Every structure is written in C-alpha cells, then in structure tokens.
Length: 235
Ligand SMILES: Nc1ncnc2c1ncn2[C@@H]1O[C@H](COP(=O)(O)OP(=O)(O)OP(=O)(O)O)[C@@H](O)[C@H]1O
Image (cartoon, rainbow, N blue to C red; front, side, top):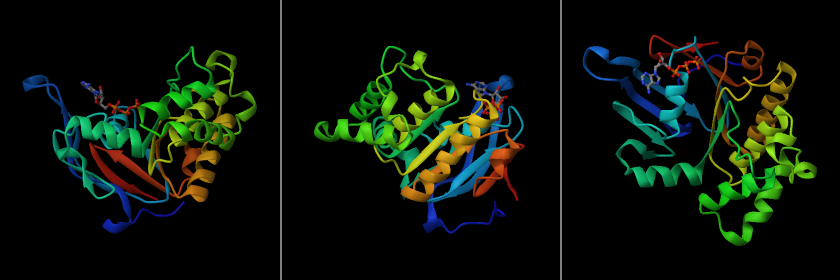
C-alpha cells in the first residue's frame, strides 16, 4: 500500500470534479457528496472506505454511470460522461466498464456460462467471439469445470467468481465493485481480492472496490477515504 498522492490527469482512467449528489428536495434534501474531486489511476487496484452511510455506494453508482451527479463532472477515459445522453452513457458502461455487486446479482435460472454469455450479448460483443470470450473469462477465474452449474449449485465464492467473469469477459478498462466480499467469509474474500490483484497486474485493468475490511486495504495499491461527503487521503 502506498500513500495517496495527486495523480496526473493523463494517468487517470476516471476522474470526478466537484461532484455533488443531493437526494430529495426542500427541507428533506440530503447532501451525500459535497464536491468530490479525485482520480482513479489507470492499472491500479483501489479501495474506497468510509463509515456506513458516508456515500461509497452513491459514488460507485455515479462513477459507473448508473446515476447522475447533481453537480460536477465525471470524465471516463477522456470523455465527459455527465454531458452524454442516457443512451450513450449506458452504451459506454456496457462496453467499457464491468460492475460487480455485493449480492453477485446473477440470473438464477442461467448457468455460470449463460450468465457471462448473456452480458456479452447485451454489451454488443460480436456473436462469433462470444463463446470463446465467455469460456476464457470463466477459465480465468478458475470456474471452467463448473461453468454449466447454476448459481444455487455454487458456493458464495464461486458465485462471486462468476460475477467477476461476467465483469471481465468483454475486457473493460474499469471494474467497479461495491463491497464484493461482504457476503463472503474472510478467507474466500481474500481469495477474491487476490484474483483482482492478478487481473490488474496481468491485464492492466483498473479495479475500484468499496470495503470495510482492513485486511483488504493492506493488499490494494491505494486507499481513498470518504468523510463528510468528500474524499480525504489515507495512507
Ligand atoms: N436514493 C436515495 N434517496 C435518499 N437517500 C439516499 C439514497 N441513496 C442513498 N441515500 C443516503 O445517502 C447516504 C449514503 O448512502 P450510501 O449507500 O452511498 O453509503 P455507503 O457509504 O455505501 O454505506 P454502507 O457502507 O452502509 O454501504 C445514506 O445516508 C443514505 O441513506
């Protein structure tokens, strides 16, 4: 782990400038993010921490273009995501990002292979390369032998590895993972983070995850902390 330093704009895969997010209106309005400025350097494994309710999920949803900031801009790979149409933002997310959730979010009636292939299909991945890309991703996470099993026939760790295969199959530039180990025991959770570490080193993808687990913070390259609706450095 290294001390967070201001990274150069050219080395960032995604950056937030003055991002605020207000939920609700009038006297019921809650300002969750209060001018977040930060960058995720390309090719790093980054953790975002902060106490419960500090806005980690809100920020991940904004970076992943699942939500729009109330104010400020998000620039992904040199493009301002906040000025794009909703349709274009969805397209960029599907083609160039991979999202991983705490609860795995797999389709229960589909096998691991079908889950991965389905997401390749909706991302617009060319039909002739889909099978190979799905099998390769499942092999990469060590699940080739179990790829025809459905989620309920798999352990939590295997389900999360399936979700990772789904997130990497289309070779995204950025993977965002919201508490990807929260449903797993600590040993399985560490295996998942080590898999992330290998993916970053071997493919150069950037992975940003939220976590509460101190053991994970020791393995990642950088840790950012959310406090009072802003990012503060952490070493
Ligand atoms: N759609 C929404 N409408 C109103 N308030 C919301 C909405 N989404 C989030 N919030 C509020 O924003 C704050 C931050 O929530 P968020 O889920 O981002 O926190 P978090 O840091 O991810 O928390 P945890 O570690 O518990 O998952 C919370 O107070 C939450 O109640």
